[in-house]
Length: 115
Image (cartoon, rainbow, N blue to C red):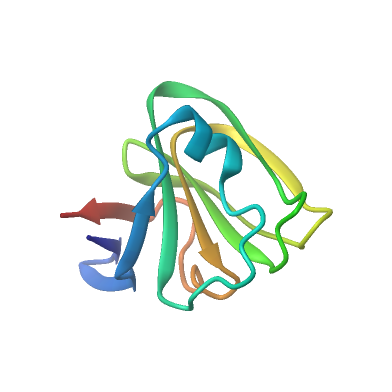
């Protein structure tokens, strides 16, 4: 599974090591308690509808780039600090990447999960 970024007709891979947090437990745990996060990694949270989705960094040991998506379009991008970062926005999909993983991604860009 790959996570792809599209802008101005250009497409690039953000991550090829992609996990989905499909269960409630996986969504609650997120990246907490992981000692390392690979560079080419993304954790994707898919939801049935748009709603305010918050991300906290409690027990997350590395900074993350977080993308909030609505229908595959980036509506917010934020770099969160370990342990203390918190942010929220409306989304139907959340993507967590290691810091730097979303460099070059801007609000309005398309991000897609490909099988």
